[in-house]
Amino acid sequence: MQRSSVLAVVYLPTALLAFSQGLLLATLPLFASDFDVSYRLVSLAVGAAALGTLVTDVPAGALLERIGLRPAMIGGSGLVVVGTGALVFVDRFPDLVAYRVAAGVGTALWGLSRHAYIAETVPAARRGQAISVFGGINRIGIFGGPVLGGVVAARFGIDASFGLAAALALAAFALSVLLLRPTPRASAGLTRGMRWAVVGRLLRANGRDLGAAAVAQSLAQMIRAGRHLIIPLYGADRLGLDAAQVGLIMTTAAIVDVSMFVPAGLVMDRFGRKVAAVPSFATMALGVALIPAASGFSGLMAVAAIVGLGNGLGSGTMMTLGADLAPPGATGEFLGLWRLIGDVGALGGPLAVGFVAAAFGLVGGAYVLAAVGVAAAIILAVLVRETRVSPLDETA
Image 1 (tube, rainbow, N blue to C red):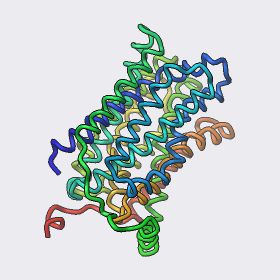
Image 2 (cartoon, rainbow, N blue to C red):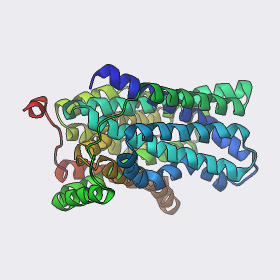
Image 3 (tube, helix red, strand yellow):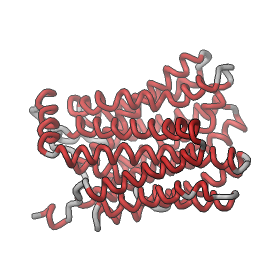
Image 4 (cartoon, rainbow, N blue to C red):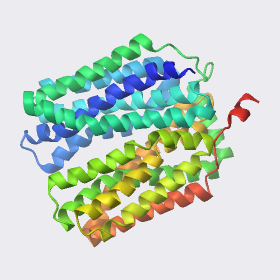
């Protein structure tokens, strides 16, 4: 597939949707708290989209092969438009949660269809670069969106930030409608039962590799999600840093993270997926383990930068591994399961940190999270086979 085609069909809409949802990170919690509900319910509103994505992963994966990638991408982005635009008119808290769940369902369809599109149309020898850029664009949007959302909300009101987010999502929807062409389905002629049978045969034939990869995927997402909780909590509660200092630390880590997605893709395609993934999670584990050694603002910024470096080195690695392992004819079903495993890990990371921190303190939470990263690196290094395909193999 030509790079210009990937740029138009995948990267541009992805950037627009990433900025759209990134805008909400700064304003949605404030909007939810205006309903005079508890912090627990505010967190429910903020996490409702993730919940919608989690419960839709497997059904969305099955739907991809039934309706095709183009309708799934268009339908998914359309749901995000509706779920985001409706926030402008929300005046009841339950409606807010419902619309965020709808946006999460759309995100599951969108994300899986884009993942499958790259897996099925980009040659395996260049897949790492394509997916790492895809992941990097998402991170740029999530990084830049909150700043823009906060400025717009401060000047024009929170509703204006929701309107802008919906407009960006609508632009992504329009690009998908105009530029996306139907792609031949590898599952053509296969019934739903036959596609799941393909997945079943793959699981039986490669149970050890896939089981190890699934555990590594879950652990990897745990440390990735957990870092967003442990660093701010440690900075505020143990070091007494204010919100601005914590924000600067997280921004610095994000800048380091985003700067690595192009090298990560090159490493994956030239040297192997494991060559990028194993150092990634080992470096993240090192950075998290050093958090208790930080004695002030500068120290915590340094270890957060190490964590960001590690996460950036692994940009797109788990998505690329999933695409490599997906069986022809049942790509959607497999990637739905793969994403579900990762989303469960992402949900479990902050929960694990919270439970351990409540029982043993933040230092204990940091060490447990670091151990999760070490386990992910070891499993990837020892138990998961290398899935890289060289250009020579591909053309043989």
